[in-house]
Length: 109
Image 1: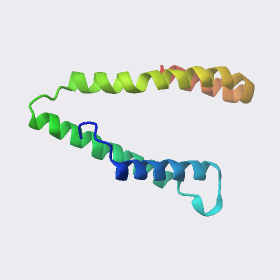
Image 2: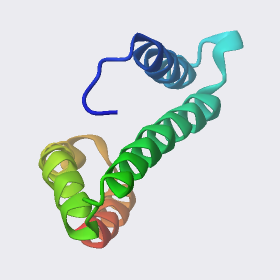
Image 3: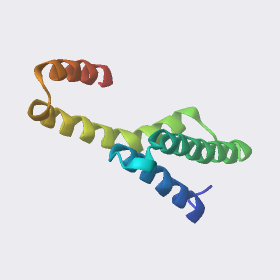
């Protein structure tokens, strides 16, 4: 699991994302968005478990390093999404929706 490109994993990720997108597009027989989310979680669990197992076998696993790497990878994208949705919210949401969004934003921060 040391950064090797796995075409099978990438294909399953692509299928998972496609199922979610088709679900949100409300395209008839493709109402399997939840299946796509479940697939993505299973794939992620498989990859992370393999990474942790390998590091444990090599006696170099650290919770601190593990969570630091995940935060470094995920938080920048999360902050961009929060910023963009904060900009877009007043344009697209009603007053009630905007109040609910503010509560969600405070919970996310």
